Length: 363
Ligand SMILES: Cc1ncc(COP(=O)(O)O)c(C=O)c1O
Image (cartoon, rainbow, N blue to C red; front, side, top):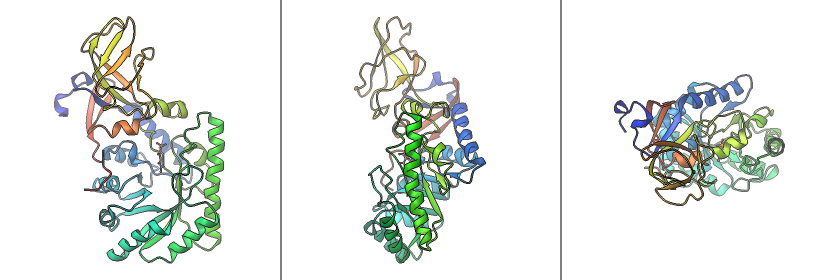
């Protein structure tokens, strides 16, 4: 898409991914303001949008120590864009050449939860002639990856500090099972209890005389609780920038929905209409999309690859009309688009590339 010829969203080919910039900017500023008077800092998760100019806007808003990524390739895209402090919040066993390449001149850290995934990092560091920073991932209840809190984590740390090629910098703890709790008080309580396990582990490591520079974790649904806990240094909030309808149900008023997918009505009947986007244009792991401007319209099933059937008697729309959909999963939807159209109302302000989109294998 060429920005010079696209003045308003009505000029766009569809489907197109839109980011409402005033809303996104308010989300970014809200998070920056939250940490402004606290010792904790933000380390936003890049996987949400995979768009370097957007990451830069987050960094420039203040309160950010660096970014989080899920893959080496995402980290490489950030480094190439000038962001020099990146946590790859994953165990890394592939793409070690690229890891070494970016770690040589930037602050890059990776996760380990076992000597088995620490050894390849150490070997890569030794071969390159410098230590690669590692954080020990502590499993605080999500049971995805991570070592048990307490003594098992300390035991791994003891191995790491004796392992040439790696540098133990601290702990990582993400409570993915907590961010999905709908009821706010239950979610806050679980966030507190689970993060305390990581804080206690940090204290155990420190009481063994081992410096623990960083404890990082959390997400957009738990930042408010854990951001006030003594012993937590970084908040890895991701989805707060663009949101989606499913996350919005959990975060309430803090963040606004800024992401939407613009579609065109390609066929109408008295019962409804058909849009030119389907499952290949909107991620739907958390449910079908919703119609942003017409909350009473229904999407009875969302299965077609390039079509969406909308049920809306007496809708009054015509073939060629435009309509915006809110995905249930913003991160998955961004990963489907090469570009994000930055808009303010109907006006197209810019078009930004999602340069790390689809990246999982470094090139
Ligand atoms: C390691 C890690 N940190 C943080 C997050 C938080 O992201 P969000 O704010 O979108 O919940 C996630 C989400 O999957 C994650 O996997």
